[in-house]
Image (tube, rainbow, N blue to C red; front, side, top):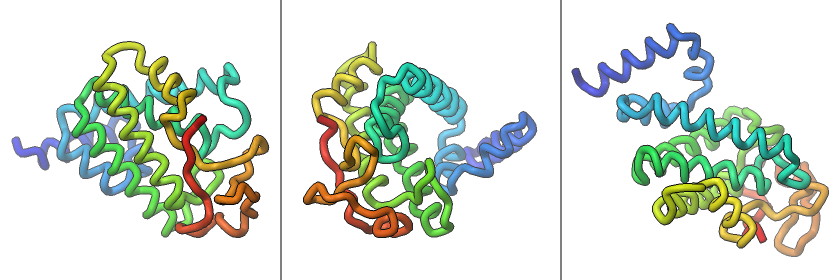
Length: 198
């Protein structure tokens, strides 16, 4: 059976098992990844769900101060841990391809006016996620165990990236001045910048 036909079978099984809404929210590039990786797509989905559960636990334990939305240190950890866990289970190349497919959706969501965690996605957020994905994959290749601990150490050591902001969660420009929401929200290219997490 060809990969395409197997992918179609997976689509129908997802729809039949009540995951239709998840599939509907999935971007085109992610759908292509699922179809071209039919034997590991389910595993990647389960890993992704587990990562979200772990991140929710960290948030509830107040591990992260302040903002935990897009562009935050929490967001940086989520992407690095997701990619570390995926790399550990399905390999670096496949994991990073899925990460890139996920980020392609951000540009399409921007064009459609779809919000991601209260904000429109933008170039800075996409670049941040891609950099943290790379670091997560790198961590998985160095360490087989305790991936969350290693990602949190990378956070503290400034090896992850986040969008520069103050303690109130307001985004800052290169001069550390607050960027008014109206000046960056809804603009793909804006003054938001990436900095190391330390």
